[in-house]
Amino acid sequence: MLQERLLETAIDHFGRFGFEGASTRHIAQASGTAMSSITYHFGGKQGLYLAAADHIAKCLSERHKPALEGLGRDATADAAITAEQATERLLFMLDTLADTMLHPDSESWARFIVREQQEPTEAFERLYRGAMHMLLEGTLRLMALVRPDMTERELRAQAALFLGMTLVMRTARASVTRVLGVETISPDEAALLHAQLRKSALSILKGPSA
Image 1 (spheres, rainbow, N blue to C red):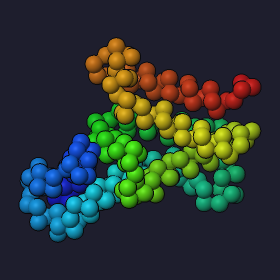
Image 2: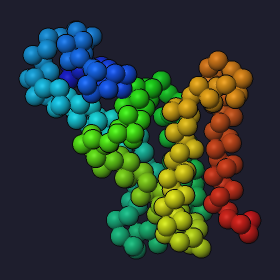
Image 3: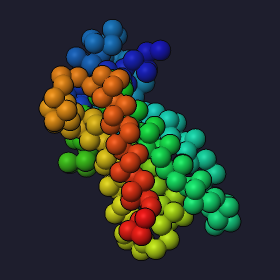
Image 4: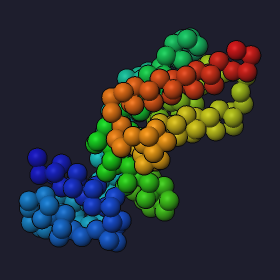
């Protein structure tokens, strides 16, 4: 599909060169279409950029919906989830996010997202509202069920750090491979990272008395 091909190419180019450095002419050429297609489907460069952010948010949101299904509809729905169930949901969500970060598809997404983290534009708001808010607030609600001893401020900080433990697998890929002494992350290294992620998360979820 042309629109999806344009979006995927745009994400790669915007991530590599930034909004100002990316060329719509080159994006169109790499997508095998004319520049007029960008104007027709997205209204221009700015529209394409924002659509690229929406596309990333949609992909991330769809991948993580299962872990957050039904969460946050109301206090009664949240209260029906046990601490053990909340723990499993959190671990499942972290596993899924780690899989995303280890998958080749996330390479171009990460470049785009990191640029928006450093210098936020309207695209950051699209990314946050479309996916990041769901992940952070979902993590916060699940954490509250597991660690009722923590204040909301502490829970919010921990929710952000939980996601950071997975994001490093992509955004700091060079450092991860260097410290592991490998050139690429093979299935064995991926399994190791998954295992250590779960151990770290569980140690935090169990709390100081565990």
